[in-house]
Length: 178
Ligand code: 2AM
Image (cartoon, rainbow, N blue to C red; front, side):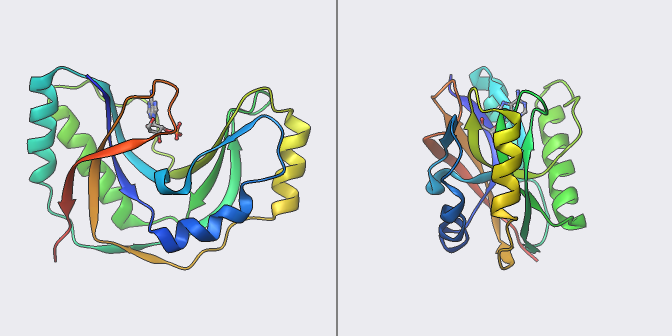
């Protein structure tokens, strides 16, 4: 079974604007812009019946389309930095969609996600990057300020790469409707 997760895709135009960020940090493995996404619910390796139940529960989500904007740049991992990400302007609509995805996971019999939802788009995974180099990179880049985009669907992705970072395959897509 591949690793499964639900996510919002990042439109190509927005992703292209972020490519200027893909340089200047030793130890960074930059994610290909076509693989940028915002994870809603990570499922991981599950059996076929659970995957089917999750897919069905996702198809019953009713949330209208909404606007989202990337903003800010940061790192996860503190003294042992492991990722560079673009942040998201807080959005109640996004929170609603994420909660609906969490409910769908529960309906499929999965254990609750213990971690708080920290919406982000991972831009790089880090290996051996020095914390001071990460801080300097973040300061130099200043941040991300992309135009808003409309989220009109979310998807179920699979990934066969155990390290993460793609390539990802869209297994199913769910349109948001008013
Ligand atoms: P990340 O980008 O912050 O690492 C595919 O791997 C997606 O699922 C990535 O966006 C990744 O988030 C997320 N992900 C990977 N492993 C996860 C886990 N154990 N719990 C939650 N999210 C995870």
